[in-house]
Image (spheres, helix red, strand yellow):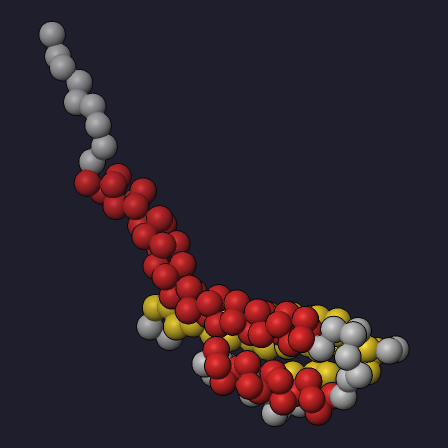
Length: 123
């Protein structure tokens, strides 16, 4: 009577675990990028809450964002740069938009590119 071997070979384990390891590594590399985005989104929301119902000026909004970015240590965007942060008059209020791309190095010369677009209304 022959006994059949059961189980998975080493090569089988490698084939199964390699995609899982790549996804976990990508998540580790993308974590700082998303944490930076969360700081930016929180800063925009706080500025919108701060100026809610006040007499608004784009200059004051930009200065408040600059202060919040300094406090949060945001390095990806510059609040003084009009290409990074767009402040547009929208009726009685303003629309503030932070649209940018960020890249995280992955393996060798391969990078992961992520696009972010956060918009808040200040009325």
